[in-house]
Length: 333
Ligand SMILES: Cc1cc2nc3c(=O)[nH]c(=O)nc-3n(C[C@H](O)[C@H](O)[C@H](O)COP(=O)(O)O)c2cc1C
Image 1 (tube, rainbow, N blue to C red):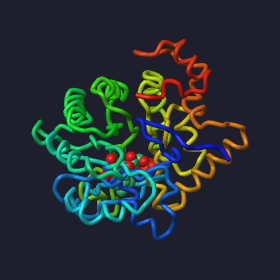
Image 2 (cartoon, rainbow, N blue to C red):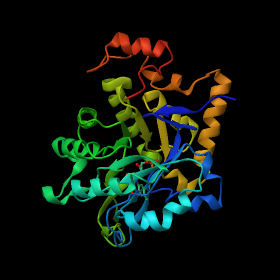
Image 3 (cartoon, helix red, strand yellow):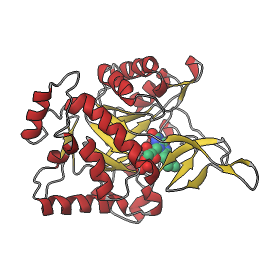
């Protein structure tokens, strides 16, 4: 049987297929329908310092090939998460990654510190698509200086690996990736939702209570693939990329992987095809067996083989050598 296990940021995952934040609750809910321990990892719904009720409804609306949401980061807060939900998570035999957000740098740090001793949480995924109230409401992930300062500050305080989930609502995603690399992030997650809006023409009003929301689902697959491609083209294996955006099938996942993702997350598909993550795992396994690929790492960045321009840190030769050896030689931070 093809080996799908991977090692990223010093952690071994049973496979590279994870579930995306906000689309799978805290992993506990799905245990009623399938064996969640088959997943490579579960990324939790965003966790903040204090409980948040979320936005007023309507906060979800369908779109062509996708959906818009403005849930408003509803969650019980880190204390209640640890008390009520964490004991149930401990029973599930796979890794958990805590998606963390705050309204200030201090809040992000406090949430991460509260989770440091929770051994099932193997890493943090920062949601930086939220406003920094102390900096006049600028979104952390929309200003390179604000983002760099946040990543540096958290890295100085925590022991677990830090992944940064980038916002696609910027002009050059690789500039934000660079800031994360320079500030010591252990991995990048590409991409969060795209800002969108729908109008109800019968009522002549916006569909969502917040007017705008985040677009996700198959509609955003090409945007995610493009951003992973550009980031991998610039940084190669210098920092692992986790791909998320529009994945329903193992073919979608392969697009992310060939563009440069070392692991993938299934998001919106969980709502319309609950078994999608398991099908992606099986699809990748069958594909590798059919094609005679022994190691998953050989697939990562495959579409770049003849098209590498080199990057800040890896010369074209080093990068191509690493591909020749199987693509995994530099895949460690
Ligand atoms: C209902 C909903 C809630 C989400 N909540 C979060 C969240 O709390 N934190 C976060 O970083 N991303 C959140 N996301 C973004 C997803 O994790 C993912 O990045 C995005 O939906 C793109 O992937 P997809 O097209 O496979 O859904 C949410 C997405 C949806 C649809």
